[in-house]
Structures are given as C-alpha cells and as structure tokens.
Length: 150
Image 1 (cartoon, rainbow, N blue to C red):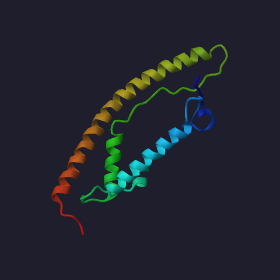
Image 2 (tube, helix red, strand yellow):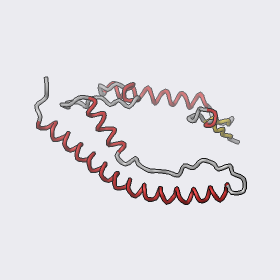
Image 3 (cartoon, rainbow, N blue to C red):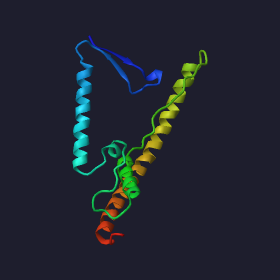
Image 4 (tube, rainbow, N blue to C red):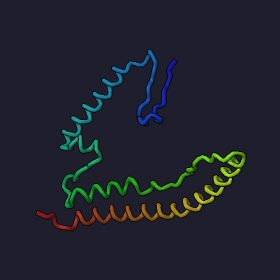
C-alpha cells in the first residue's frame, strides 16, 4: 500500500513523501535527469540558454529588433492576462457560542463581496486580454517596419 505524507505545514509545500516498496525512486530520478539532459541538448542545438529558460528568462527571439526586457514583459503579460480571481479567505472565529453564527454571517457577506468583485474583475480581464493582443500585434508590426538598430 502506498502512503503519502503532506509536509506543507512543515514549510516544504512542494515535497510529497511516498512510501511504497514498488516505487523505485532511483529509476524515477534517473528518468528525470535524462529528460533534463535531453531538453538541455535540444535547447543548445537551437542556440538557447537552457538555464535561462528554466528560470523563465526567454531572451530575445532570433531576428528581433527590440530589447529582451520588452519581450520578457510581453511574455509575462500574455501569461498573466487572465489570472485574476478573488477567493474566499476567512480567519477562524473563536468566540464561544456565537462563533458559528458570526462565522456564517461573515462567510455570507464575504461571498457577496467576492461575487461583485469577480464580476468587476471579469471586465478587467477582458480589457487585459484585448490590450495584450494589441501589444502583441503592435510589436509584430513594428518589427516588420522599424529599421534594426546597430
């Protein structure tokens, strides 16, 4: 039988401890290392810096006219354009007898507020997506028309 331990309360949220005699950890790690080696080789063949790619730094695409920060910012805008959502987040209420009633009231009020905030945020997301699309088109058009510096 496989057992899983959650270490998130111990400060290591990305660690899952699997205890199963049928799981060969060394084999899994060897596969991961081999996949990394293959990806590193492919990146080098394409003239890319694998370590920079792994850190999320995508650099300047081949034959472009603008600086790397512009392309990095444009990439981030494309990734983050629709990542807006407000979720319920309540702290515990430790008042005897009335605590449950207060908590239910707080939850109901928070849910109403979240509903209206998310409605407004959906309009913001639509705006963000349109602006990002326009920026993508603008950069593409400028790459084709602006003479390369240097």
